[in-house]
Length: 239
Image (cartoon, rainbow, N blue to C red; front, side, top):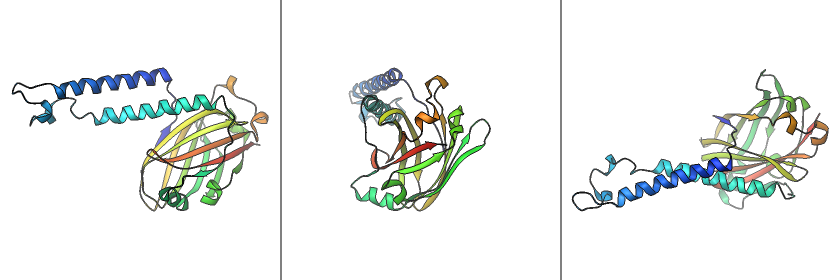
């Protein structure tokens, strides 16, 4: 599966939500109108032939847009607050089972333009990821790339219907960036490869490797659909 980071503006998301709400209202009006026989269209035997009767797709898109807007609202608040980033495991049986059966077999980062591998890690276990802060040294060359290809090979004992990640970048306790990655269905007891593309900030917005090193923490939250399972933190040192 391939995920590309793409941040829409709040205005465009609001327009999208408004558009689908309007569509839903229009479809509801159709369903509630009366046909020539005096019965509700919702009761008509040919209901499946009526355009717009099944608006499950609109509901799904509406839900996704609203979730993104909520995340953006939280991101805006985090930009103005100091946050202590630390690993967390949700107090549910499913979350605990997920953590016990999940590990990152390998992860690497490559320059999207050249394909050159710049960094690689192996065998991150649950103990590594969800109980302690991870510390990683990454070549400062990464900061010069226009885009990074990140490939994660992970193993999961649990079945996941909508596996996704929410990743936030903190600089000295302040959230400065947020990314979303969606994988989807994960078979139980399976090993999967997941490639993601991360676009770099504009050069004028980048801090130096010296300023960032040791002061940047990546917080990654793990979800199955809407259900939060756990999050980890990785402190980066640029060398």
